[in-house]
Image (cartoon, rainbow, N blue to C red; front, side):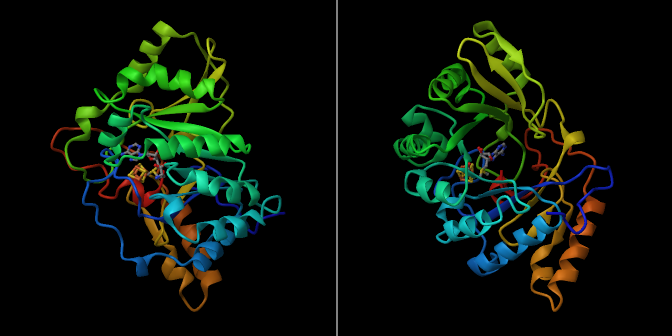
Length: 333
Ligand code: SAM
Ligand code: SF4
């Protein structure tokens, strides 16, 4: 299918990947992501299922070929499977891939319906295999459910990639074990540097871990072979020769990857953020609810392409306000 006018930004980057948040709510409270008493958006501000669907179709019409549903926790939104089913019908018809990022707590229940709707792979966030640390980090006792969710997804043939935020003095010592566990179960695993997005209780800088240092430490134990960059995403992958599995590094702070950025993000209220680390945004909900949604949406997407910045600028500093006031749970990971 040809699209009406591809999305190309001012730096000649072709935008083909949409991360669409379906809710800012979550059943966990990961301490690096949000405060315990997180203020969630009033439900009436959140796009309806029908609006999310129309929006996604408009993006597919403009050449978006990959959609990742995210949040907050996408699987806490009651009608999310209906959206996945509706979008799944566009697979092979403009849409090439439909995926989801989840914390896994409800994956055991949803893995089957997701697979049936055309989802082939999911990213599951898992920062530790230790139940006590899991509860400390996420402020909820849910490790068993998450592991059950991962196992259920794998058992029916959903490909699972593990995402792990590397956290100094928290999970840092157990990262080699997580890598071994993931690979032994057939999962790729990607490590991520914590980003200064949104206020939390405490200081992220206390737990910020630059990934080059982690890679050096992993190399004392494993043989890491660089793999060609074929994902188009921010992760740089290596093969761990001892396990045979793939390990990715996402380094928004120590190694900027913006030159190859192919993505945009839309919040559950329809705000398009042109860059995860920037404030540049356009209001797609207003466009959707206008008298002429098609024309207003087209204009809004053209504006987004004009304002998408060349790169993000992140830094951690004690006592500093975060790079952006919004949390990852608003823009989606
Ligand atoms: N709730 C789902 C989950 O946890 O997978 C989807 C949304 S969550 C915001 C997406 C990803 O962002 C997760 O892998 C999470 O660990 C990560 N994340 C959250 N806050 C972050 C931060 N400040 N810096 C880096 N990654 C963060
Ligand atoms: Fe929820 Fe995901 Fe944020 Fe954890 S990282 S609080 S699971 S949105």
